Image (tube, rainbow, N blue to C red; front, side):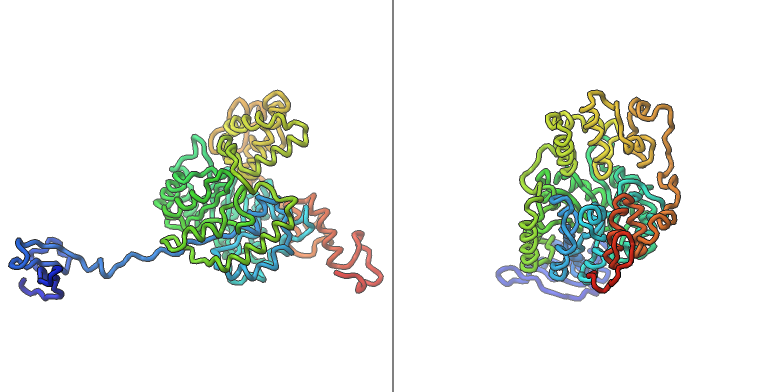
Length: 528
């Protein structure tokens, strides 16, 4: 024990000294030169000499506490898109903004997806004004939106110029986090938007559209996550739009991604199959950082797991969200009143639909096909159409069923069944899909079907956006006087037919003139 300094005596239950903890200072009995302390047993008092080594590093370096689990609230976007066809008005959202801002959410999703189109088409509202109004009232919580890559918030690819301008205006008007996905997981279709988000100083979240097929493996998804990190992603989202991700799959996928990238991972799922909450827990235990939830009156069914339930389930453990149910209660009460207000259009919020697992279709796609067949007096063929969907999807190269590919596959399946001859008719959009104008398919399309659709035409293999000419200047000339803000040109490019009705009405309201642009005799007499 030469040159050793006794630090601590270790006693047994009877108070006898059985060992001393000492500083080794080169004691040869310590096998690891990096160890500076050992416990030496007193041979006279405790029998045969035994050495138990103890490193001071276990005392000095404690495991870093895991950051709290984050909750993204979807009530302003995906929740009401899922259960009430995106009909929530801006005036419905504004009164609760300040209260939600105090909850402590990781973020609030409040824009993008179908909300942009719906605001103009059905509600006669300016989506840009909604963004500004909400951001004005939510000063503590990050605002988040969903962007369909080169499709933006529309249903076709737009020019690179349009993509860059849209991202610039979205961030400039108040968006903090932009979640970008592509229906085919073609990263080329996400690249321009991703570059623009980074340039404008926004937070870039890149999303993997989760699906099940012979070609969608753990290895593929993990590689995509790594590629997204290399593109500058600040976080990765696993977007389970159909509610197909099981707890086992969630755990395996999060683990695989975390091995590839050192980025936060966010989980997004729908409750349609009944698995989402279980999958969230499994994913969080595997290392996920944030989950998407909806306040309880707008939760479950085709929406997300209930915010309050997830908060309560995780409370007190290593995955605690640190959110308060007391602060969530007034939010829930407000949305309960909204649910009652819109009870006539609330849909799909109860029960579990096992057909989602059987046919691997999102809840929205399932209900849309039902509506289409009812309108066409062909609802009796619904089961046939559902059975046709997997066949069409395989022939189209296993696209994930998310907007807009879910519409393409569903419509084609319906046309195949109703016409009585498969691929006898195809929509313009399906034709463009086979031409390569939606991007690279996860698996090769069926060559026989491709020949039937295209004939001798050779599909493109480049990034589709490269084929689209700039379109903003022409749009500015077309809308002319109707443009009252720079963002109006984007609204027109995205939805020209809708904007042709909406923009003149907005102009007339803002300028106190009639729809024909004639000056009012006494403008001050008319309310704005």
